[in-house]
Image (cartoon, rainbow, N blue to C red; front, side):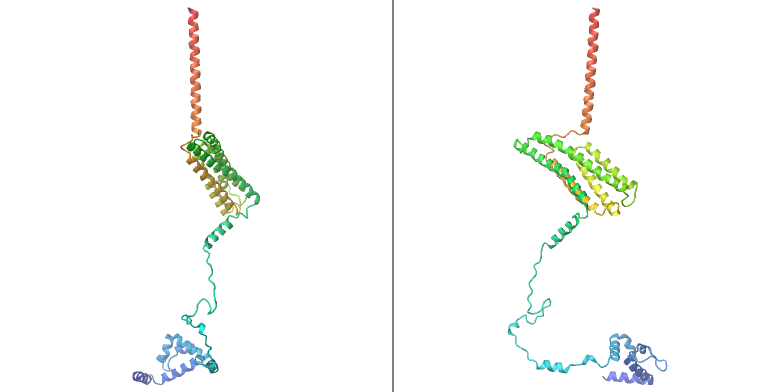
Length: 354
């Protein structure tokens, strides 16, 4: 305390009347909430009191001074004595039932005495939300009914040939294992399989060509504007890829068509994004492509189970070779007959001379 009093005395002695005038100016200014009082100078050009300079570094103190200067009274220490007396005279009622080892704990999530039943957590909520999203995505509500029904009907031949391939493959395996088939004997099942496989491949080539031709129709209708060769190219590439698959072996043909269907779906999805096709077309094509792709995979699986048990259906190369061999045999036969005729004619001439 002595050091503090001595320092204040020395400071007041050195600064003199300038300090007193600055202090009075600061007191008046603080009661009137004048911010400019902080930067005032002394009467002789000297800085204001050091306490005044420290106010700049104490924003909380300055804010309290400003609040006190603009509001009447000091509400910080105001005590409502009447309310205090009323509370002091009130009687605290005993509640033994509410007293326990946890009665002093304040509940954060609910009030005291209010029972809240624990909500059951649905463990499948995430799965249900995902299924709902998938259902809403593939509801196909925006697809015209005619296009939807005809498109779904167009899947029936693919699904039928695929299931037929699987059944015939199972029947062939059953015939090799037991000596007789379930409904058909092994030879009949193999013969029917060789009929079903070209039907599936030929139908796939037709559908791929049709999907490419749709873009020609959209270009002629000027849907999304005219785009010329870029849109026409899709309709040209599709049949150019589809029809050569009919000349390939069954496994290679199915794989090539599977890739062609996926390529066309990618092209249709991009066309939808660019506005070249209706907004529902990409979802519609995805559903159809998914069913067709699954059918092709099932056919390949069924075919792979009996690849070592059945004869391979003659391919284009085999047919060309067979045709060439037949022609060679015909030429050799004709040559032998011609030589035989020449020999017979020579023998007749020799007999006549004799």
